[in-house]
Image (cartoon, rainbow, N blue to C red; front, side, top):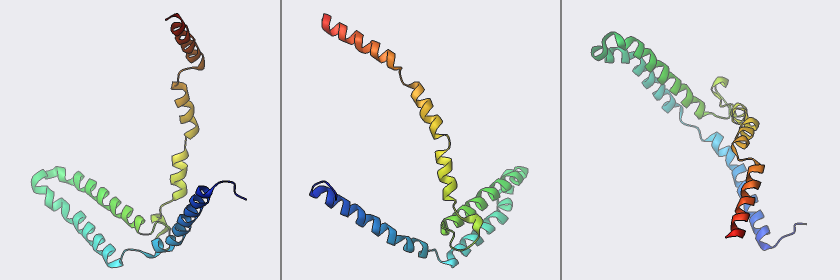
Length: 144
C-alpha cells in the first residue's frame, strides 16, 4: 500500500494519466506523415537549385562558381536527406539509411560522462582547504 496523503495519490494518478496519454499518442505520430506530393515537390526544387546554381552565380563570381556550386550541392542535398529522415524517424517505411538512430544519439550523449564528472570535481576546492578556511573564519569571529 502507498503511504502518503491525498496529494500523493492525486499526483500519482495525474502522472499515470499523462503517461497513458503519451503512450496512446505514439500511433498518431507514426500515422501523421507528410503527403508524398510535398516531398516530391521539395526534391524537384532542390534538384533544380543544384543544377541551375552554377549558371546563376557564374556571371558574378567567374571561375570561383565551380567550387561554390559544389558546396551548395553538398549543403542542399545534405539538408534534403536530413529532412527526409525527419519524415519517418521511427523507420516504419522507406530507406533504412534515413532513419534516426536513437541508440547512437544516446550513446554519443553518454560518451565520456564519467570523465566529465571527474574533471569537474578536480576544479572544486579541496576539502582540506575548506576546513582551513572554516577554522580561520571561526577564529576571526571569536576574536571580533
